[in-house]
Amino acid sequence: MDRSNQSAVGRSKAGADFLQLRPEEAPPGGLAEWLATELRTAIADGRLALGSRLPPTRQLAAELQVSRGVVTEAYQRLTEDGHTTARGRAGTTVVAAPISTTASKRPSPRPTAAAERGPGVAPSLSRRRGAAGALPGEPGDEIFEAMRAVPARFDLTPGVPDLAAFPRAAWLKAERAVLSEMSASAFGYGDAAGAPALRLAVANWIARNRGIKADPADLIIVAGVSQALALICQVLGSEGITELAVEDPGSLGSRQHLQIWGMRTPPVLVDEGGLRVDVLRETGAPAVLVTPAHQFPTGVVLDGERRRELMQWAIDGGLIIEDDYDAEHRYDRPPVPAVRAMLAEQVIYTGSVSKILAPALRIGWMLPPPRYRDQLIAAKRHADLGNAGLPQLTLAHLMESGELERQLRFVRRRHRTRRDAMITAINNHLPTATVHGAAAGLHLSITFPERLDDIALATAALAQGVKTQPLSWHTQHPGPPGLVLCYAARTPTEITTAITLIATALTQT
View 1: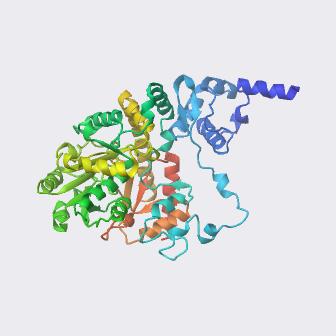
View 2 (view 1 turned 180 degrees about the horizontal axis):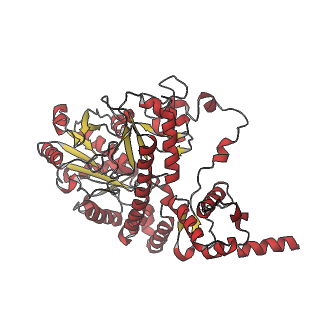
View 3 (view 1 turned 90 degrees about the vertical axis):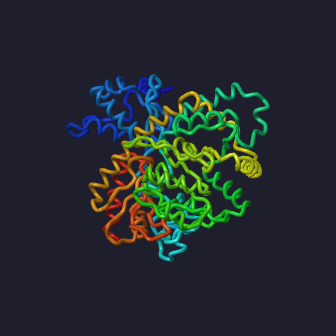
């Protein structure tokens, strides 16, 4: 080995010349921000790879000849942004890369067909409008997959938690513990209703967090709430039920899912008190899908009077399908009990870990009244013979060990910070917008008093590099124009920039 290589190896082991940082280039009084920016850039361009460990704060401070507080503050900013995680004695580790602005500026060798249509708009997005680059006024079944495929600097589309916060270490530890104890027979086909350990863990979880008393034997583990709705439609359809009322505004995705399975979806107006039960009665529908804890997309909570009216409607013969949509994420209000906790015989309760951990796990649960249990288990068995066993047992371990509740407390703090950043940015850059549903959940919605086309606004925002959803996509009756904005998956800095770009788009519509 030559002398230069020996010198390089020695520096690498000692951590000297880390990233060739030059503190003298920092602006006066801005050392911490300068250092955080330099580290973000190094993560974005790959010099600091995912999984790499930053030098100890004391060591880096000595090398840069700055106070340890400067390094600690810079590391803290990276952690708050979701780029690193602090693991005690294990140090600070890179877990997520920020969006690289330099990469997006590089010209492509040859324009693609998508580029010729417009800034980052997939073919299916312009299929129904005909205008190049325009979001569809009447989105088809493929809209969400098409939107996910569209590149954008900032993705504020709802429905996704902070995926960078997934507890990888805790999950791996739980999985290793489960594998060390699993018998050979546990790797075979399991119970179609779900692993008994997970059903017990979920029963305990919803008892602690949602006030629901449930027998584990009555729970059915499903591949998310979407599969629960599919199974419910099949069972209700076999009984001749072909109408399932939905909230308006309400989730476009849920409405499409119900319609695919043959259900008509009459709309029921939602106002500041939640679902209008008087309108529900007028529809004559025998069943209704509701999100009472945090309504999508308005964010309102079903108030006490409406809850009583809804329960009376169910007692009179109606069936409630309760989607407990992101009910665990609350910031400025006390928890509200699930409707299922007060009316077990007329409510099919559904929930999942998609908004607590990650949608990719595809693990949810359904708690039906006893009269539907066997039919729903049979439908689940014919669908897929049951969820994968190892992830079920791993999740059960996380739930029973307390790790999932620790994770929930952690992401609540992070989401609150991001929610606050979005509200501040909206107040500063979109002063005519009204914020709705910010007290809980992973998203909020904004409406505008003026008569504008929110589809045109979302299209203009996409051209600016911000992906969001127009509020009108989630309505069946005309309503105020607006946008649905998710804050959970973006850092405060990214959120502020994205809202600024939406404000620019607003001037163009």
